Length: 110
Length: 230
Image (cartoon, rainbow over all chains, first blue to last red; front, top):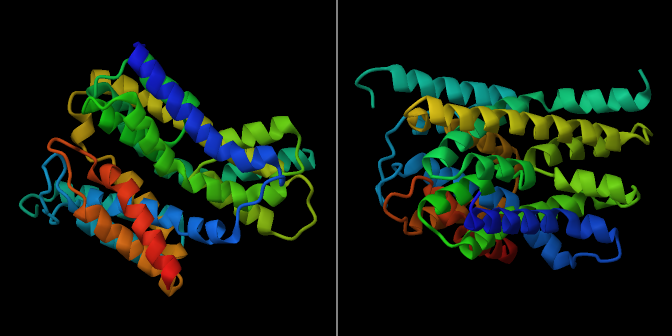
């Protein structure tokens, strides 16, 4: 492991653990202000969405190329529908991945 | 079987769907880490000590671009800030535990474990051993992650082109399954919509294979602001 790798991973581990442990470690001695609590409620879906949408819609490895017609798109649409209909995470994951790999195997579709 | 053992095993069992979703995600992390030029030790150390899927992907993407450690660390901080909310939610249940329990459960806190454990804590059945359920879920997720990352690191060296199979779709469909149920009102719909647009609008670097990762920090702040304003 190089020094660069060591610094990077050490820093990542420290900030990640710090975030996870801060409130629990202080155990009630510090409370988040109500405004911060309600703002934080939006963070998980917002971050996850910001990871999902470009990953699905932007062609990989190409700068700013919008090429939505890849197997990622039908897989994502099916995943949204599956979650709405069946409300079971495993069903969503399996159906989404199945659609993705079927689309990849179909010649001429993508 | 004691009540604690039953809680522990039920926690692990209830996490199985998420283990399946994380598995291909860990495989692709390992292969990407190898193609990004990380050493085997570094790739595995990141899984062991950071244990945060999306942050690990981002770090690998940034590492491949030659980003300096502070850039990767700050990005990790922003992407993982959502865990602060999880911790705040779990505080009423973890606050009374011993330091050792709090350290262990905090270290292994992820999106998936939070979703499973919070559901159990919310059940009213008088059990005083729900933290054992939480531990079962955490350990299942942690060990599964080490296993799939290790396999990915191995495969990255053995199977050429595995990182182009599109195994990352597993991460996206898992996250979709987690986001969809949370969009229940207008502010949340707005937060998610603005995050999507902001992430698409962010310029991506040539050769960047994980555009969402680059976009997530700048996309999150404005979307939360918009949602609060509603």
